[in-house]
Amino acid sequence: MIDLPALPTGPKYMRITPEMADLWLTHCNPSSNRVMSDTVYERYAKAMSDGAWRTTRQGLAFDGNGMLLDGQHRLMGIKISGATVEMLVIPQCDAETFDVLDSGHRRQAAQLLKIPHRTVVAAAARIIGQMYKMWDPVTLFDGFYDSKAATSDILRAVAAWPELTTLAPIAAATYRASGINQPTHLAVLAQAARTEHAGKVEDWASGLISGANMDSKDPRLVLRNRFFRERVILGTSGGRRTSYNLIAKSWNSWAQGKLLGTLKSLDGEGVIPVIGTERFRP
Image 1: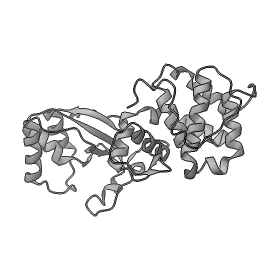
Image 2: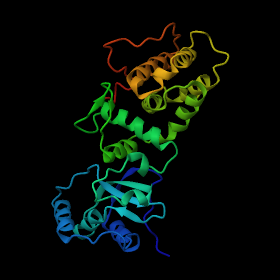
Image 3: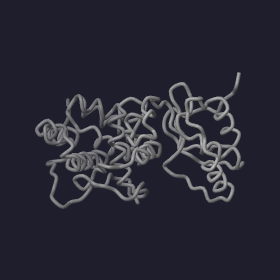
Image 4: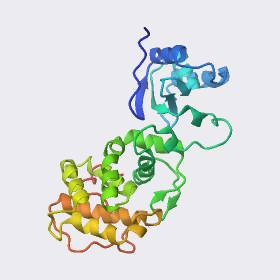
């Protein structure tokens, strides 16, 4: 039995050795893939050999059976150059979405993310990616949400922020209980999970879901009531920045153990930073 390199459970940057590239090309590259161009992979190999290759948003994609869908030229470049190269590896892709690879149709990130809550994760990645300057230029909707981010950029953000995938169930549960916008909530939670307040996320979610036995000025209850009151506005794409700021303000108060009397979104206040992210924000 061939011992193939293990694929990650979700999008992840990996160091690909020539040996890994050879195994994938030999055993995981289906005949249905297009014929390789020696001009292309030789150009890649030269860049890799010369140390001129740069890690980009393009990488390798595999289907649910571990078969290669995209990236054979990059793998061949690694194999013949003898260089080890870091690349984004995306597992569990839907093979059908690659039927249009060369026809000019854009593949959506949510189609390639074979994970639960993938639409919400992709939407949150659009927020996180532009906030942390992971690509340039950006096309902002409402001054906040990148409405035209490239699919590869979104996948790169998901790989860089695994918290988006792990915390998506919490965003979904709180939405079902109180209507709190999922992508903006997830973007706040993913950042919070990288701070010293990460351990408070579970209690935060419990309060938002139950809404019971809380002080009237508990930030969770104040946020919950605000979304209940304005669910139609704050639950739509038109209220993304507003909903994000309301969630961030509430979380910041909760994380610091403060009560919250009123919760407002003010004109011209910009995007509210999540407390504790100052050390890693660009």
